[in-house]
Figure (cartoon, rainbow, N blue to C red):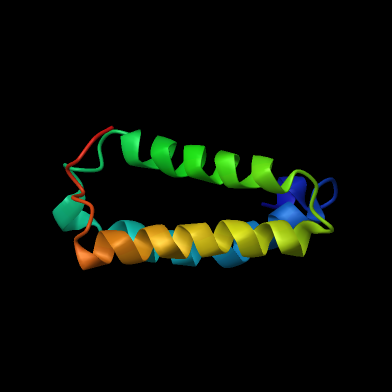
Length: 91
């Protein structure tokens, strides 16, 4: 992290705050680890994000883009938690 503190300060600060959240998420996925060994679900989520951001075209600022992407990720998470999408399902 200190390696990038001078050249990419925003990235270094984000990494410092996000690493603990990432570890928490990964440790909670033990029961789904075999289902998540492929990246199909992440590829599908990234595809949905690309489709929605193409519709918008140009964002006013970084915060507006972040709001859209966060909303999509939260919706997808809710669907996974509600069991509408099986974690073992691949596209």
